[in-house]
Image (tube, rainbow, N blue to C red; front, side):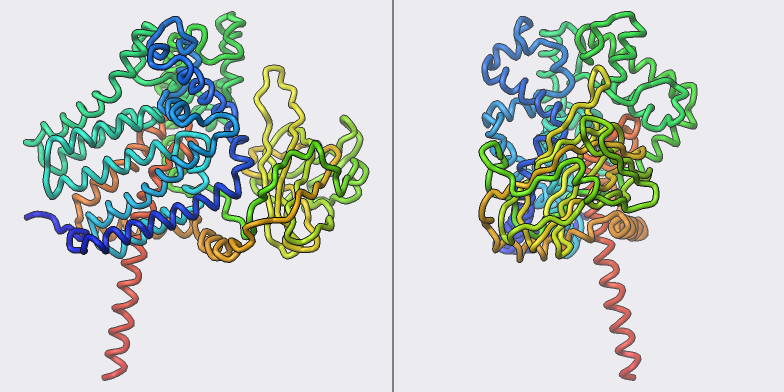
Amino acid sequence: MKPRRILHSLSQRTLVITCFAIFLLAFSVRLLTWHDTRLEVAKVQSEVTKEYQRVGQLLRRDGLSGFFSASSELADPNHLGHPPGYSILLALTNSFADSSRRIQFVQIVADSLAAVLIFLIIGELFALAPAVLAGACAALSPQLAWNSVLLLPDSLAVFPILLAIYLLALTRGRARLLTFLFVGGLVGISCWLRANALLLVLFIAAATLLLHGKKQWHYALTVICGALLIILPLTLRNAIVFHRFIPVSLGAGQTLLEGIADYDKSNRFGIPNTDMGIMRQEAEMFQRPEYYGTLFNPDGVERERARLKRGAGVIASHPFWFAMVMMRRGASMTKLERAQLLSTSPAVVHSLDTSTLQPVLMKTNADLFNDCRPDNPVAQITVGLRDKAVTFTGDASRYGAQFSCGSYAVRQNMDYAFDLPVRIEQGRVKLIVRSSNGEVCASQIVEPAETKDGVQPVQSIQMGFVSQGPSVNLELNNEAANTSPRFDIGDLKLYELGPARFLWTRYPRILLRAIQRVFITAIFLPLALLGLGVNIWHKRTAALIILSVVPLYYFTVQSVFHTEYRYVLAVNYFLFAFAAMGICWLAGYFSRAIRISSKVSDE
């Protein structure tokens, strides 16, 4: 008996209109997110972004011949920290320096299409209502929108994975070898962007066997062959250039060690939890000073093998402890990232270059000392201890409010920019500009930089915002800090940039921001668990296999290594899918309950 295919019962026009509506919603949310954050995204993982851009510039200059040449600058092992796919896209779109909006447009389009894909996947497996809900959740998600505008390949790497899962779902109706070849090839494309999905093809091959039976083993083999066809050229290139077997890139040993250190709070294993810490330790361990400053050059492959061996030794000697680490890390993947919501006011359209402007307001360290007040009993403010700056020391709460600094008069509906020097000694601080009506006008996270000498530089922070009232306040909060923050702030300056534009976008922004507020773990995780439970109860085995293969892969394989939210973005789509089914089940349950209640009351 062939599976029921809901989307095929719709007219082609209805299907196209629904897909376009989901795409347009997703694109609009991401475009507004880009407008809000375009001046600050380059500061997120800036060193990683610069490395991608360096490789992209070399590829644009040297071309394909340089990519396969052992004498090219591209043959530096330090470029092996990431696969070259994103750098190739940067080179093709010429997205460097001030031209980054080109690659961001590509990412926004791909991420909007990913929302359409999750709609198609759920529509292929279930009904129209949960499919539309799943697509809408992916479209509106602040987590996905934020990551789609970062100058990083994480959101791009998800699109081919979702397309592979959609094709796998289609094979329930008609299984063809070419389709399975494409499934594997799409996973391979994802690996060119991020290496995290390297072993996902084995999980999808296993899912293929479960869906079509062991007698159709050639389907699973075709999936693996499809991935190999895409990945092998990169592996062969690495063998030609570096004379080593490197399937995609280096970095597994580094992330394994840092992942162990993340959960080793007492430091009993003596493993650093940062790149700089690992390099410093290796320079001392091997008596090789040149190791300090680079992760992979010289002796990158040998150092990676030593890291993997060291990490495996910790795992072998503490298996139960590491199993608990994997469980905790896997559980963290079901949580939604605390992402920046859409602002209710339009973004600044003027340049933040204030070199030719005079500040409309300037606060010295003495002024700040008088203006700022602690927001909790532990927080303290001192002045004049270092470079004539005000020193702030907060409490150990992860997200607690720390300090409020004055009320500064502004003109309504004007573009402004705060300019202030900040030196972070420890912790992570979130600077917030809040209007007198309580709305957040701008925010920025500041954290310590990794430096060789351990001395923290002064970071020049510029925060552009559109004024919404007669005054604004500056707030200083903790932001996922692992320790109490300590930081200095120098003279604060406020610049008026000019009249604001796109004020009409406030109305859709207010609506979209209100919806985005519900995108929290406390709401979506219970709904997703309910949706999962309903599918298990109704024994929808095939659908469960298709929807669970990607999350199961990340829960098991990725949980071995150091993990950030951006590494596991693919899990969010399936969380939204199960949540959509949970919502539909609840709606159906209460609808039936109301009908029964009405029937009883009529009788």
